[in-house]
Amino acid sequence: MTTNKVSVGVSGRHVHVSREHLDVLYGQGYQLQPMKDLSQPGQYAAKELVDLVTEKGTFKNVRILGPERKQTQIELALTDSIKLGINPPVRDSGDLKGSPGLTISGPKGQVTITEGVIIAGRHIHMTPDDAAKFGVKDKDIVKVKTGGPRAVIFDQVLVRVNPAYSLELHIDTDEGNAAMLKNGEIVEVIK
Amino acid sequence: MTTNKVSVGVSGRHVHVSREHLDVLYGQGYQLQPMKDLSQPGQYAAKELVDLVTEKGTFKNVRILGPERKQTQIELALTDSIKLGINPPVRDSGDLKGSPGLTISGPKGQVTITEGVIIAGRHIHMTPDDAAKFGVKDKDIVKVKTGGPRAVIFDQVLVRVNPAYSLELHIDTDEGNAAMLKNGEIVEVIK
Image 1 (cartoon, chains in turn cyan, purple):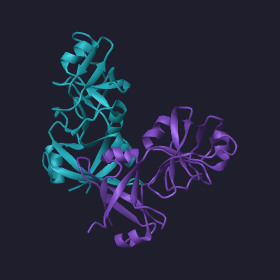
Image 2 (cartoon, rainbow over the protein chains, first blue to last red):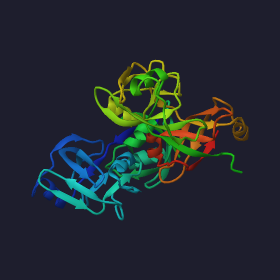
Image 3 (cartoon, each protein chain N blue to C red):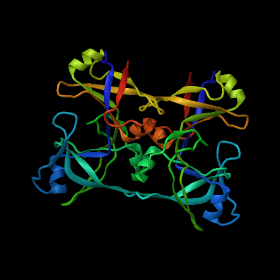
């Protein structure tokens, strides 16, 4: 039985853009160019890069992930946030109310957003079939156990169930580096 | 009862220097200038800073912690190591055999060490009295449970017992940022 096993996807800092903001950053009507498919169906790393700018610092060449979204969303690790001097909350994707903003700079223009920067809460994508096998349902909170010299148990891992999802634990670079986990490593879900 | 509680100390990247290397970096016979006492008795952050240099990158102004040690030791987080393009092992302090080196640059000279760079294994300093209260002994491995939106349980936490120690959990910046822990926060030891 391997129904409690899940592979790891470590997300680096990245940007999701709205149509409106892509018009400013890359030009009116510009279409994102898919560079590499991501594990979740329909999601891709785009060729397009932007700079993230605050009063305290800049990250150059941060990748846009496609497709476009309703609202621009920037996902940083806490280590990144400290360098930029901002204090984003830990949130689930799309829950941006009251989060801080910053300036996004593209080849054709700049956008200053007043909210949209979050630290993504860790979560597991799975299909309804996976959820049945794991004995969990959408929005359940589970634990995930890792191995090795930096073994940890991640608590507060959100289960996200959707027929379009592919089974994967998503964590950010701080979490991946703290536990010394790499993309594709296998970890264990504990209820 | 609060005998299972311990406060957190998050260690940023830092350098311990040997007498021989301090002679080269800061000049013959140079004495480290204590700037701030650390939680462990006799240990201090020195005023002196050095640069850490590899082919791939440089960290400028990395602090030396005093007093001098028998062997120069550099403690990095994995995030730091990736930027420098080196792959240090997770080790306990002083266990440097086979670890990678790098170039240390001070105001008076440079030293290239061939080993000495580690990622410090997480550990708890405690006195024999603390150990008795916790029901643990030197070199035991325990777990530590944290709270909040990024709650984790750190496994593989080494207990280090010495009458000169002050009770504290030591983790690095990756671990602190992944779990959103700050210096002085209280966490719980689990056996």
